[in-house]
Amino acid sequence: GAGVSQSPSNKVTEKGKDVELRCDPISGHTALYWYRQSLGQGLEFLIYFQGNSAPDKSGLPSDRFSAERTGGSVSTLTIQRTQQEDSAVYLCASSLKTYEQYFGPGTRLTVT
Amino acid sequence: RKEVEQDPGPFNVPEGATVAFNCTYSNSASQSFFWYRQDCRKEPKLLMSVYSSGNEDGRFTAQLNRASQYISLLIRDSKLSDSATYLCVTDPNTGGFKTIFGAGTRLFVKA
Image (cartoon, rainbow over all chains, first blue to last red; front, side, top):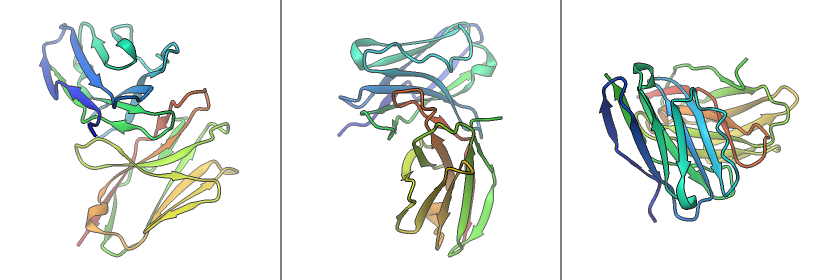
């Protein structure tokens, strides 16, 4: 079956611009996660959606970052007024009532 | 102190060697533990769960030591294809299925 998909795969943007990153989780998965990974670093937790519960936003680094999940499926991560330090790979994962997370291929964001 | 700490390595070992990684966690309330594998420029994938009694999957053995708050991963008879970054993962015991990832340990297996 289809795995987690993310778009775009690569995004180059100018400092100060807004960007939207999209995640399509595996159908039926109730949990969805966003992480950020800088070059050579580990995964930094950003936000976690679980069913209809309020999302856990404790990992968002600033108020420039926001995410929503519509209809319990597709999620969009928005970064406003991008900065160079936002450059990283943004990974989305989903899971079905377990801790086993299935990751998408990521979006590589470069802020120039 | 980070919630999950790992030796970043890299570990450089010859084929056939046995290699072990440790990972320490700070939250004594954590209940679930995992090892994920991440190949270069790829997404992480679950390698194995870590049970209280320890578990083995082929050449891979995972152990949990709750008293000392660490988990370990042992790889026997290393293969070239084992070269990857190994990520230690725990849950913060905050409800739901949120997880905390360590920064990873890099392994290079050489011919």
